[in-house]
Amino acid sequence: MDSTRKEWLLNALIAGALFAVPLWACVVNEPFIITLATRIAILAIAAVGLNIALGLGGMVSFGHALYLGLGGYVAGIAAHHAFHGTEILGLPGTNQMLPIWALATVLSGLVAGVVGALSLRTSGIFFIMITLAFAQMGFFFTLSWPAYGGEDGLPIFVRNQFPGLNTARPWEMFLLAYAVLMLCLAAFAGLRAARFGAALMAIRQNPDRAAALGISPFGIKLVAFVLSGMITGLAGAMMADLTRFVSPAMMAWTVSGELIVIIILGGVGRLFGPVAGAAILVGFEVFFGGLTEHWKLWLGLVLLAVVLFARGGFIGLLAGRVRHGG
Amino acid sequence: MADNVLALRGLSRAFGALKATDDVSLTLRRGEIHALIGPNGAGKSTLMALVSGKLAPDAGQIWLEGRDITGLSVAARARAGLGRSFQVSSLIPEYSALRNVMLALQARMGHSYRFLRPVMRDQALISGARAILARVGLGPRASVEAAVLSHGERRLLEIAMALALSPKCFLLDEPMAGLGAEGTKQLVTFLHGLKQDAPILLIEHDMDAVFQLADRISVLVYGRIIATGSAAEIRANPQVRAVYLGTEDSL
Image 1 (tube, chains in turn yellow, cyan):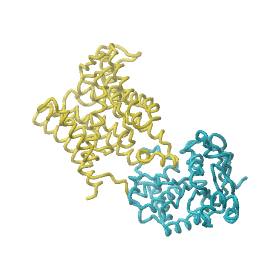
Image 2 (image 1 turned 135 degrees about the vertical axis):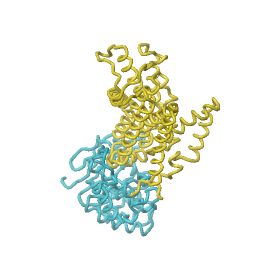
Image 3 (image 1 turned 90 degrees about the horizontal axis):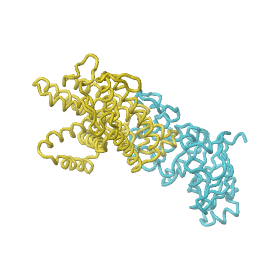
Image 4 (image 1 turned 180 degrees about the vertical axis):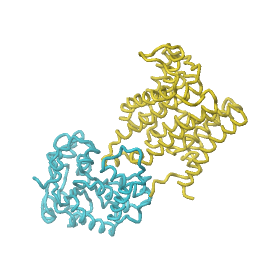
């Protein structure tokens, strides 16, 4: 079986498992497991976003927590004003997920546009540091913003609503996250296979060649970075709703690092890399976190092993390397 | 002049006290191969970088079909009609030969911001790229990744990518570099036909190839052009013999 078919089979298995496990948990009434699966799905959405910039475009953003946090605060602030019946900038709050998602996505895209326009003039370690700096600015801004809880964060007392679903029920919240994840994966696969993806992946491998063909690296990378931030921002809004809480911790640099770790564990640039990586990360946290508080040490060793011996991550290990043939 | 496709006018570029390019003017006419030769360190690479847009000149202009392209970026010059190959093969290593050429075709069409249609279902792109690969003789190697192509095949793929741009002129930087006698011979034949598509500014070390191919030759020494003329004129030029060719006794 060639590697492309192997990967599709593996992807189908992962997608099936991520659906089957919480379904089983729903049947045997284990809401904790359902919530875990929802967390995996939402983390995976955030990482799908980062995978556009990092995996396809080779832009190692060490500041994607900024968009996660932005999305989170959009959800938190909208719910806060809806709950208290107050206004923000002359507008009422809302407890509807759809407008919250739209706003989170657009706002994250705008911020990513500014961050990208400034940081994409650099590359390598400078790019990493500038994206980190922007995320830290967001972190300290929210930390010192008493109107929305400052360092204590902002609770969402009642989970926001989605038409036709009861989002308070773990299974229905899971279905929502799963559906959004599948849509984001479809978007990722679509743009990767299209001309935009062909240009973006070429720029990652050889920007000079792309430019000599007439493809300006800056524009393509900037658009990719904006799309990347938008998807991660959407995940942020959903994450805040899942935990019913948003705080500056969501913008902490460790969160940016976790998103990168997810992608490396799962497989950089691979469609289901973020899903596999998020499952591995959350799995480690739950199973080893219960055994020892030093579980991150063991995760670190796994990460080291992946970087040294399995550069393609989980997907690469099982499905082989990518082929851009034809 | 109307038949000048590319014209360099008074190009200069210094690195500190070193004048790597010193008041260089040359033209590339429709249908010709204009070769640029010169000993190591003569400034050929700098001149190439100035023309392709990698470096900005301190003075002078570059005109492409009556348009001043001096201020344009590398990518904008490529879109304006400059098709270049690199001295050291510069390909998209993880892409197959076919996808490398498809990328060039896509760039020529100027449609890289398309998010929906998969390129591998774009028959115009695929068949166009296959035709170009066949023309350079890489047809059977279409699905091989660029990273694992042989050196000679990589040189050909470079040219295929430049060809896919349908440029107004080619800028070929040592296309024969590292090719064996057989490969060089084939490439000479191919380039001879290629100049009908668009004129070629050729930087080349292989003197035999240059004298076979070039309609005109310019000799670059210490950043200056000391002579321009036909192969016979250059062979006969005493100044050229003294500073450059005389050292090789190969004429």
